[in-house]
Length: 151
Image (cartoon, rainbow, N blue to C red; front, side, top):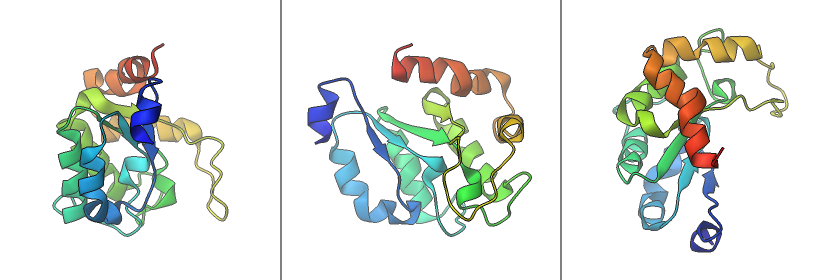
């Protein structure tokens, strides 16, 4: 299916519990097109930057075809608002590893039932903490989405 949609210039949008990435690594590495991983990897239990599953995500970035959306930390953060610092550590590491393939996203209208909806302005402001380098932030907010989505 990935090869078929790639012919149209589409990409595979992946959302799963990031802890499953090691089980899917071989399959994901075989994909020939572009892969976009949602929600900073969406590790449903806290992980660290040296966790094997997070290392797989970093490794997927090495192929030059994998992108990550820096979005929806409220869906899986255990540290919670206002800074979602457990997710922020991972987002910062990803932005350092592949600044040209990070994307910021709101996940608006925040469709996850049972979770408090975040303040969208704060979610944007949080990028200053997650990605303190202004040039990298501009890439995630402007340049990278324009390149990936062709606008």
